[in-house]
Length: 139
Image (cartoon, rainbow, N blue to C red; front, side, top):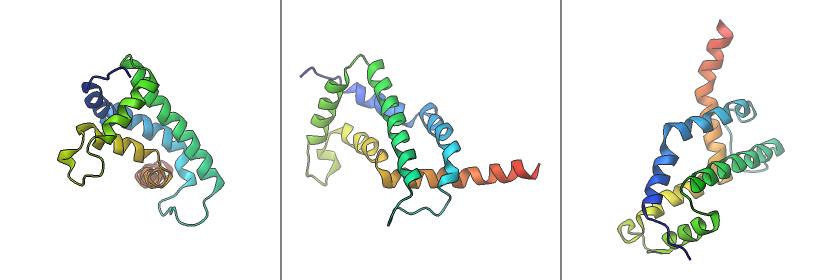
């Protein structure tokens, strides 16, 4: 396996938390928030349209990740193997100091692509967009 410079994981964290990345998610989410509302739950049966929108989100999210990986001149298979290796360092330890520094951001990135967190994020975007929509309607 080709080695991946540990600095790539630091750059990944910067990329993931950069305003440009966050703003791109907000721009993508705004046209879809009307389907979610503020009091969305992930319990019970879900609307089919939520699942379809989630699949679109995952495709967008994976595309952004692929762009980042390509910008680092790394192939996706090499990057994924490096991620797996970082996650396995100190696996099972509840002491984060025993784990890879990259494990924290990798776990956040993985969690972001889970349906439950996606629904929560969409509800938050809907809540933030509500005052803007009300203001536009008042004018």
